[in-house]
Length: 575
Image 1 (cartoon, helix red, strand yellow):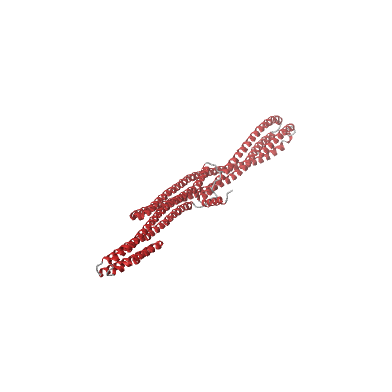
Image 2: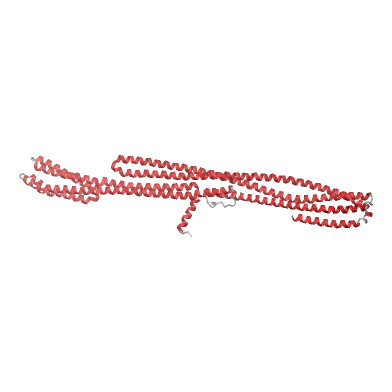
């Protein structure tokens, strides 16, 4: 037995199998679209992260490095202005040098503040550089400034400059350069990390999208094969079976709720009608064979009866010769009586045979005609209903072909979208090339997007091939339906032929009625002759004694004849 996961998959497949065909294809296309959108969304998210990282690198670390380097240059300016103050020969030159020195110190502080704002993570290190430089400007170089302002302190100022101020400023500059070198290495590491992130993002994006696309393609192939192609092939096999006359084979797929299920149910109804018509045809042929056997049996009984009657007639002829010898003494009236009796016997025998044969044949033929008429009418109705079902199936197959054409249009639209995506990727590659090194990551992503667009186009081509298989199966179904339509037309023609035969049997029934009328006329003649025989019998009463012995012999033969006739009638009734 299936576990809960297996039952869930089976129920999902059953629900998918009951979807209309166009909805099945749209679900697969939606899955492919969702996969593409998910890959594009993931790529966009990674590109946004990389862009933020590059922005932080450009606007943060690089700006801080630039600001600190410029601040170090202003430290050099401060040192140079201190040297200018030591070399000044007038008060004006000293004030000018002091003004330039203060401006340089202010610029240094401004640049260091901007560096700390650009890179808050290194604010502590930048503040340490500011403190070190401030100590050099104030503590180490403050004595130089004071000594340079005295009248006789030039030598002291130069000594302080050489011993403490210049080394302190140089140390602060060296520390700034060392700090900048550390920032440069950190920036390089960060740039390498961003590059590694870009490569890994591209790899993951490509792997995820490729895997998801392959999974969707596999699922699409599996679902299209099991939910569309296989049911249509089974339906075609059922149609071929109907075309070959195998009317009792079960049609599969009638429980489905899609177009294939509707076609299967229609085909099953048609199969039932054709099977009923075939069963009725076989039953009718069997009844006709039974009737032919009965007629042959009756013909054999009639032949046997005629042979026996011929033998009895020979015996009657021999006895009649003896009766003729004895009757020669009779008068002319006896001769007239004999003639009338012979006429009555012949008419009565003929009338009896005609009436019995016609009565039996009329009853059986009337019953057969009524039954055949009902069967022919029912067969015509069944053939007409089958013809309408075939026309309805042809209409549904036409709708299926139209739906397949619409799916082809949708695939064309998706192919156009893939081409547009490819064009956009090409434009992105061109723009990335214009951006130089800063757009190198975008160029790689654009190249991958271009590859994904090509994969989408190939997947669309695969789906188009599946749609072509559906259209081919639909054309085969149309051919099978045409063959079934020809079979139904042949059944209608056969029903028309049977109707013509029924009309001919009706005409035969009319002829039998005429024979019955003629038999009634002969019976009336017998009645008239019997009246004359009665009169003649009165006149031949005197001669009856002479014929007594012969009458006994004739009576024995008549008894035997009666037994033969009764046996014949019983056998005929039993047949």
